[in-house]
Length: 284
Ligand SMILES: C[S@@+](CC[C@H](N)C(=O)[O-])C[C@H]1O[C@@H](n2cnc3c(N)ncnc32)[C@H](O)[C@@H]1O
Image 1 (cartoon, rainbow, N blue to C red):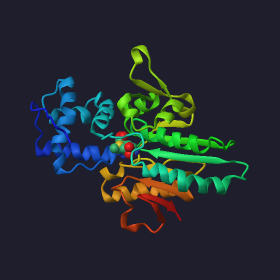
Image 2 (cartoon, rainbow, N blue to C red):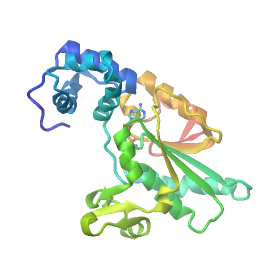
Image 3 (cartoon, rainbow, N blue to C red):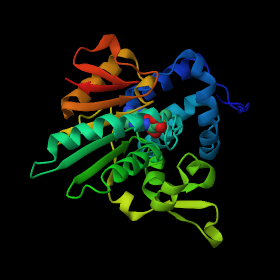
Image 4 (tube, rainbow, N blue to C red):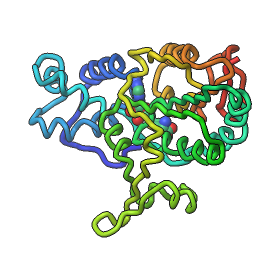
């Protein structure tokens, strides 16, 4: 919820509808009437930077000017909601350790190729894929010979840069148990006091990539064992949600797991998945 709003800029119905349609087309994010103030508060600073006096000029700038094409990323980065945390919905990481990983381990332990592929879709600033990486590193600590890769994707380029850097403030890393923080992070000293940087061992497990869930199907040679897509489809309308879930279904192997956010249960009790935990599903 925005607590302060810019009073210099106002948006009328026509401007809101134009921007709303453009944003939906670009990101799948479905802004309801109630989100008018959110649009004003997130874009006002940008209008001021560009020296534009109203939202009609901003819309025309995007649609009609040469530089406008590049403005699209700025618009997307400002409109996406990026809230995330280390160990967000901790029950998911317990489910990963207690249910998913033991099953995958048993199924593949005698295979020649012991591959594990995970996708964190809508990874924001990286807290989710790094939490997954810590959970996997702990589980496989004494189980050598596994080829583990996490693909972490988002549409927001600023968030991806933050995620790749893997540097977080002390209050952000607070949910990480002390012992794991020492094992997987470097503590900043001097001018970096109060910062923590993810160690290379974790970073090497993750590939960060820009990907738009509503525009592209991911091309994969090996299907995923596990997909996390939490607190992302909540912003889409029901048709878009269904399309995105279908895409996940197509790149998940049978017996693979899908984690959604706590308020994103599968639509209409999708019979292709069975519930294995709180908003955690297994592809039949
Ligand atoms: C609220 S965050 C959730 C982060 C993390 N999954 C979690 O639950 O903590 C939602 C993320 O989804 C991303 N997102 C929104 N629309 C997207 C799309 N069409 N394709 C890919 N990512 C998208 C946003 O940029 C944002 O970083």
